[in-house]
Amino acid sequence: MKAIIGKDIKYAASLLTEGKLVAIPTETVYGLAANALDPDAVAKIFLAKNRPTFDPLIVHVASIESMNELVTKIPQKAYDLLEKFSPGPLTVLLPKSDKICDLVTAASPLVGLRIPSHPMTLELLKNLTFPLAAPSANPFGYISPTEAQHVYDQLGDKISYILDGNRSQVGVESTIIGFEEDIPTIYRFGGISQESIESVIGKVSSLTTSTSNPKAPGLLKSHYAPKKTVILGNLEKLIQRYNSDDVAVLSLSSHFNNVKHQYILSEKGCLIEAAHNLFAALRELDTLNIKYILAELVPDQGLGKAINDRLIRASTKD
Ligand code: TXA
Ligand code: MG
Image (cartoon, rainbow, N blue to C red; front, side):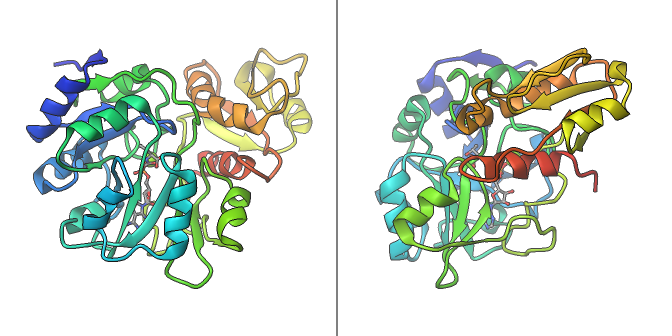
């Protein structure tokens, strides 16, 4: 059976209420959703994605009020960030209440919560009596989907319905932040920049490239990875080193002559536009008959930190 792609929010709600999986649009990437309060439904997510159960899931809700029963406490800094950036690409790690089962958090006492900023998914959440656990809707380790068709291509035979909300606006996943220490920690760079966060709550630290960090077991070094080998560096030098038949070039804004395949993330060098295009670009280049994707890091500021994080993980093979 193949999934149906459609825009029927009521139908999506009825499937989720029956304990089934539905792919949902968000402003970051598409999610693979199930009733977060039903362990049998949540287990189906891990199976469909081939995802290890040590990798916890983010829980999606419609409002800050609906977070109350899922957590035991909302620290002031978390509250301030939620007020400022929700709905939006921000995930807060908070101490979970008994309503959240261990499968969702991979046995961590913290649960990741966010309010997605997509009108269809917000309406869906308002139609439901439970929150939605949803990882990105891709096979474990592969690039996240930013279009309904991406979900269909890879998970179309594992789910029955994909709610189509057009292309994801932001294009990279949510920023994940925890409040266990006085200085909060960013565990994953994403759609809300570190600078924006610091403008609200002051200094934060970041901890985003470890494989062994128990607070964020899902942040494996190799992730968001296409099947082709991604090589990062100075593009001009890399282009000279490889046979042009073998490569596709992914640049922020530069054009290169003498290359057959190139994808420019943003002609203007705009990091917001580049983030929006990044995953679709990697997917497209991954389908070409080439061996290597040559790519460059972008300025390490604003959404550039999220872009660089994804490029580095895409280029790591272990
Ligand atoms: O933008 C997003 O966050 C998207 C959309 C669908 O909402 N979701 C997403 O989920 O990117 P996923 O599962 O692909 O990545 C979530 C990551 C996990 O790999 C894990 O590292 C971290 O979030 N995470 C989730 N819950 C956590 C928890 N309780 N403690 C630590 N890390 C957690
Ligand atoms: Mg993911």
